[in-house]
Image 1 (cartoon, rainbow, N blue to C red):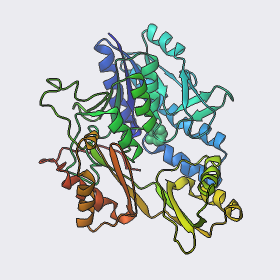
Image 2 (image 1 turned 180 degrees about the vertical axis):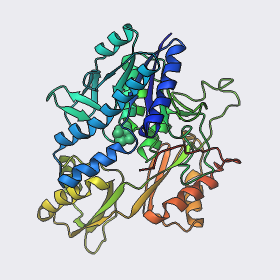
Image 3 (image 1 turned 135 degrees about the vertical axis):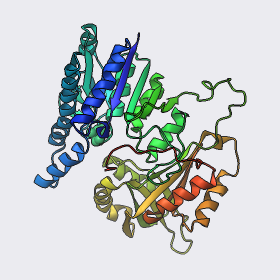
Image 4 (image 1 turned 90 degrees about the vertical axis):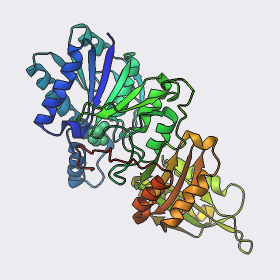
Length: 428
Ligand code: ASP
Ligand code: MG
């Protein structure tokens, strides 16, 4: 039988009892005849606690040392899970990301996996062991330094291992039963999706749904690895992230039409910068965004107003991760004289609400229904952006919950009975 790759998140490994429970689940899979490779996250809120500790000793900790620190969280988990497994009479071998052959680029804090060379894993499997890998980390091919993949990166470790080992499936164990039509913490009547396409899941993850790491979904799509998101606290079937959810339906293509909307996502991690009074001439926008690119800032929405005829000046607004706010403001301040803009405005009291569904391609009227729902809920729209299968709006931070609920209801996504159980986690 084939290899099963599993990932357990921090809330599934919160304490010794939780670790023993996870060990039993892992051993059950091994008993059923599969080889098992498991990627583990740091226990509970360990990563946040380590981050707090770091900022306690230094306001700007060096990125290399931060990675050395944070990777310790996953090492604790991997060793404890391996111990719990051996207590059940099975043998396990734990490996750091580096030992497991997770090769990355050299960007500390958000490294990308460039290769996986799982020689030690396949050897350990061959010797009959269960393999436990520390998630969220790797080693840089260039610098030989230890790197981390960004918050939530253990999902990506798991899918990358599944691809390298040609596993049949990658199971992502978390503290909810799957991917829901909205965050059940905000919309208790959210529905569990049985299946969702990679492309919709990519949009959901990119728009703030924290259930899966964005790059894990990209990886899954690229290598065609089916991802099964499910709870480690129940035995329920979760959500399958696959190429074409319809193809795997009961009778292919017949009446099993895909729902138009997959879900509503929200994100409170962005900020908005407005460059006020930019001269309306060739090359100005290019200069501004070049400065931001040089500062390694990922932008999200960008809006440029038409210039006022009298002044020939325009405003450019964009959103970006709040954590990059300071860097972006500094980079822009440096080019003020050169560009000749008036001033910069910074606003981090914003939130983004996104409606996502592949059915948007073929169904008109989605935008008007969405904006109508927001209007009825008294929510003002600050900025708008769209893709083929997504509409996102920026709203006031305090209006996010209302906006999500109103949209969810307007598109008939509410379940009749409450399906969503949040089993664990502090939501930190
Ligand atoms: N422990 C890391 C985090 O909390 C990685 C992960 O959980 O996947 O972000
Ligand atoms: Mg975590």
